Length: 522
Ligand code: SF4
Image: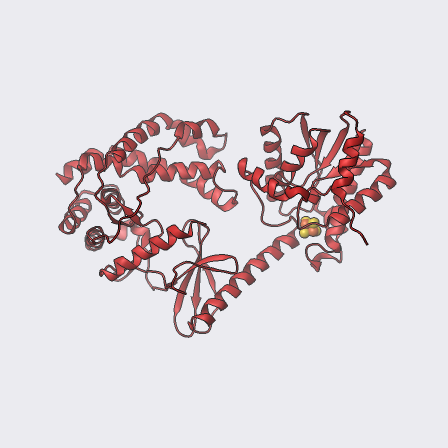
């Protein structure tokens, strides 16, 4: 049977409007799906969005999608104004409608009933409240069956006597355009359809993908057979970290969230250079001559497992600090083979972010300390710009959290930020963090030991300010995350929100100790 082009059917209806602007009740499931649909339909209709989605689980997710939708609808200026109405949320309505179909999976009869439930409510609401047409955003998703959506709409038109606006919004690259719009407006994009079953299906998909990836790596590289279930452990800030035990050895697998694979490849090669120069590091295992491998849609890096622990600041003795100062001094004194392009930081626009902050508590410390932070940053950036071109291999995150200890043996981990840059930034940052905000004895031990191995070629009066660039950049990154400017991932947004206050405290504390740092060094 020939496929019906519902997009064409919609265009025919729009043509027949003859310049009139009828009232349309648009059922919507979330902000991203509505973005492109609104862009199209708002030119021809006066739209009211009905948010009726008792399928969405859990309630927090339901509210989050609603808030995102409301926020988006006010951000864009449409030809005709948009109103958003939240309908009731009663999960029972959804569970009753899909009874017996729960385990059928996506695009199954379960979904047919789910579309029908939500579209029936929209048709009824439209009829009762005097709308001219009703429709839904659902057909924008490639994971939804447009034929079913339009069949349901057509049946409802007859049953309830309210005109249905056909649609297949995914046509003409609609889905891609909705993705671009949600990126442009920094919208949260969920990674599962909505119901508890689809959430679990997504989790199972991710688990299976991870297990398949692990099997592929182990089999192809003769790394042994699994003896335990892989354990997801808390790892770096943005990457998932998994511990793997085989009958031959144990490994750590990092699943990268970054798409900047080249940068990662380079930073891992610096870890290997450090290791080849006698510094105790955990460096990645090369697979197919690469540190980063793309398997089953995942970018992964494999490391040997090291049985060590991170020490708390108070557990770091003078001896520990001396060992670390020695390692950092030696890293900075390694001769660089080829410098290549150095990525200098652009100046951040804190003023702009200040205009975007909202009422969330996470922004309070930024609001309260804005002028001070801005002044500090201006001074820091000016100093950073004056640094010389004396370059070394640098770790850039050389603090107690990135060192594993086994008695007095150590391994430096997390080289993902390592690069080639001016070592004075690493030097002051590490001195600050490892000496617990400049405990004099610890600071003196660190600086004295470091300076046995590496000479700082820049003016320390400039370098000490410039070193604060990393924490300022971290604050900027956290603000961007909290404001959803660089991520849609809920976990990352939360991390951004949680990091702002501590970052501001660090910047101010460091700044206030600069005189002391210089005095002790001289
Ligand atoms: S997968 Fe999506 S469309 Fe299908 S039942 Fe769940 S929420 Fe409804």
